[in-house]
Image (cartoon, rainbow, N blue to C red; front, side, top):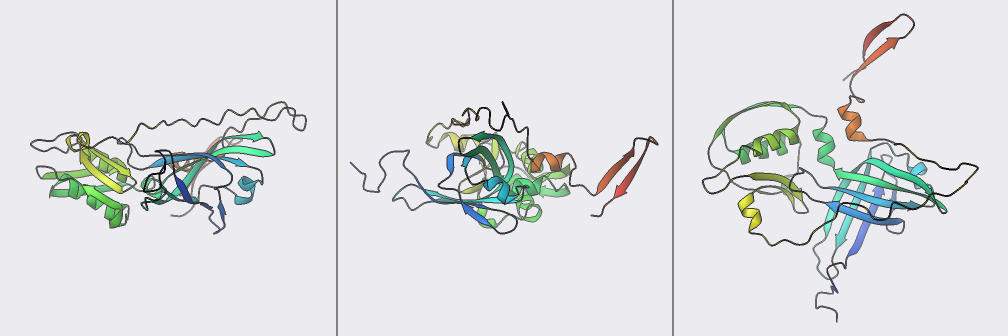
Length: 274
């Protein structure tokens, strides 16, 4: 029988929106072409992450010119509950791209957009007699420009500290400060993002909560055999397309280029602007 709230079981859900948006403002509804989607929230991760497996028969991949500036608008709810997960994620990477019957399959990897911002900023800042939660709040608001409504709960800690953040990325600085949190009856604090927003929470508070379910991280439907002998090609494998986070970390978008002349065996630094 159907429950009063319209939910048959724990696996019932309704995808109200699954929209891919590119840098040119074009959008496409993925609800009819996605095979599987996972969204993870992890105590050991500062932001939410996810993957969506696409079966693409209209070459959406080519038409959208994926470059790392795409967004995924998600709205998911349990039927009758009226408490949807509504988020705008940043698509930062594609992977496992391979031919399939009447098209191709690939995975879009997405994260909260704040992680992309965090990878491009360094924080070198001093705090005088501040609590851990005050440091976390300041970095979120003033460095990452997080909407205050996205901060769910920052649990209080004991003691005031003098901090000097030594040129860390914002989320790296937050985790560094969180590791120093303590209370007279609490220890081991975690900073993480869940569907409700960013949280600073102690281990003791977490173990008092009732667990929802156990989640698996792996995708189950990526091992489809590629088309054999398609256009006289026996096998094909796309090594990679792009990875925004790795590119930023490797300096691909930095303002300085190292030019090497193999013939004269000389090199030159070229400043391209800030």
